Length: 268
Image: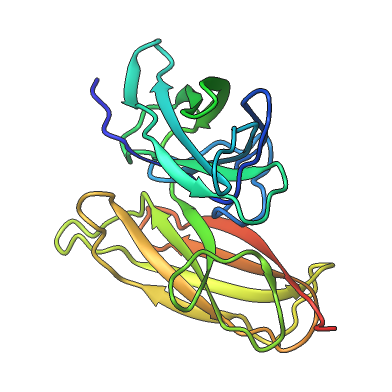
């Protein structure tokens, strides 16, 4: 079976001088700067699998300059290579030093992707120091099911944001619904969203949840339904955003739920 995947690879930050090239401190977060997913939580087909890591040991020349690249291949449970991307030279300046480069790869999982354990082989090249680093990570994919995927916090400009904020900042929590039951005539879903703001102990901060109904046509290529929820923290503290989605067109209503933590810091 042929599986289409969209892969993106990016390196962020400032690498520094070193004797070898290493990839470590791996995470699978919700959004590049978001919180880590539970270690044993599989991805749902249609999700975006992010793997972040640190790259160190690049050789620096001239005015704090290095040239490097990151590539990957994804191998299915049957051992077949599903997608491959070679490292591409990228020039970077190193104004701050520090010894670490935050980097990530993103693999868009097709909605028809078979369940199983997939292997991601990473390779990083230092084109100045003539060194190479390799690493291997696993992606577990569950059978298709209704769920909430592609969770990430963003600034109102659309740029990815961390789950840390200051009072008064404006954010948009972005997520998508996948594998909704569709009306056979209109090809629309009918999903109720119930969103609660909680304190760190899980106690609701508002008398009633925010309730809305999604009745959209799913995007033809990805078959997912994008959703947003605006956030404007008004005081410091540790909070949780609980999103519950109910597929109302299923034979029996199906519920999916996520909890996204938010830390609001007091300016000092």
